Image (cartoon, one colour):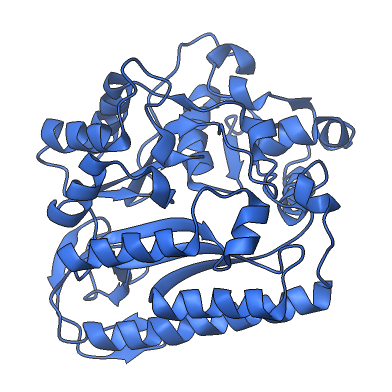
Length: 395
């Protein structure tokens, strides 16, 4: 280290829940000469990226202790432990336990705010069995933080100056199912909004539409501090493929939910996770995916080309050609871009509340990207009425 102070570094891959957990991990290893790779295993590509990150980190800091945690640390434990670059593996369920890191201090609060949005993991694990997903093997059964624990997390971030909080989880809308009296996510959202009137904006990460409880629905359509944006874990637009995925909704459920939301809160924007090229997908199924994007006006699309994950039922199904999967994913992205372009044009002349980032732009409540005046402090919330759209940016 050439006499320099020990430096802890946490490298995060994957979901927003990992982002939230990485902040807590950094607090546990602060002051140590250590690199922690908080890994992802949602796809084979995610595991490949985890390996890349490990090799890159070792080349950058050859003398630091390198530890791996996260979903890949459980699911791909033997393979990662065998890498010469890796000094140790921390089980995913143990990564927020100070004892796992040989640190004497109890769990510390998150490090000073790095993001304009505070990511708060309120739930982990999953009780479902989607045929394409390996994550329950890496995260275990669904487990929820109590309301009191979540409120302490939110308070900590507010004290650090975060103007927006984002609730995250592996299966966010299953929050509370394992707690006494099994409260719904709406009860947690209401508790946060009631406890912290100074919280400017609360946002939800990806949710399962069929698990949106009545209280949460009412908050989504009526509570102005709850961001007018909902990211749905749709995965596909064809009923037969949804059945083969073992999803718990059908196409009509998605349409009914979005129609009900927009009838009460027309400005709400819809995002979605969609998989291209799931096993047995036909051209007609792909057409259902494309029409889903157009008909639901999906303006924020996370398009995932399907890749078989060893150990999942879908990996044993008849596979779609890789070249065709890539082509279909590109078509889905083009469809989202077209819907998004029309949506952005419709926002010109509309007054938006924008949270400024550090790069001269920021995000409105509906997650539209907006240019902010030069010199706007990062983390400030300002009202902007955009006059045009350039390169996907309102300005």
